[in-house]
Image (cartoon, rainbow, N blue to C red; front, side, top):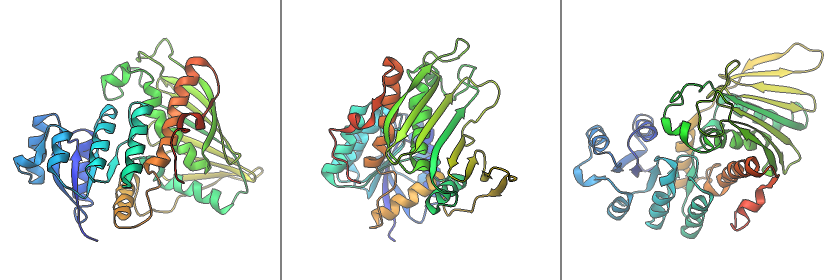
Length: 348
């Protein structure tokens, strides 16, 4: 497979992690030939590490997509800037892989979908939590029918962010619906993945406890029924003071016809059957985990392989769940997910 050239939009923070992965784990498959960041210090530091010249550095994506012709574009900026960079890159003829959430608004996310459809170019969204050993094992149990039919799934996320700025950045504590846009976007997508279905109706509540460090809703409970007959329930809590299930330790309980599967931290899988001792084991190894899986999958797509499982036409369904959760919190009414994306022609 030929080395793919990359225009990287973003150089610090999450984008810096992307660059490290690309160079350290995919150095034989990816070569960064252009870099965009609004911070000149970040540009200078990464330029030295990547061996980039001044004419390969940009402070605006508009200038970059005009000057750089790469095999693909990576976008790892804050969400309000995803759509602008992604649409510009697609229109310039470059496939795109972008961080989640897709964008900061549903309209912006739809602009990205339409640009991908118009150009017929690959566009994938990062949903790295799918690619952990125990999550993959739960899906195998479901697909192979080891415990019969799936009835419902309960997911729990709980972090102790009671101190201001304990969630990394101040803006996560001051933004509206930080739980949903910064946290639940992962967990709603996971409920889709683990259940094997897409959401039909979503309802629930969000709130902010008096002792919260957040300006807006930091907790919520949402119920979703899926189009394959399964049901899912989600508990989100960014003000947890006791039992926590924080990042990479979220707790999922899947109720099957013939038993229950629990997964949380690490690779451990626990199967419960009535009247029997729990069966506890480590899920099998997988070739790539997290971001690494998604980079590998995207590169294979560019080489003619199957489309990414988290391609934008699929992932916008998870994002629509976030918007629906926000709106059901505001008006208390159940939401049909199809209503949010009915103006898009989404291919399977």
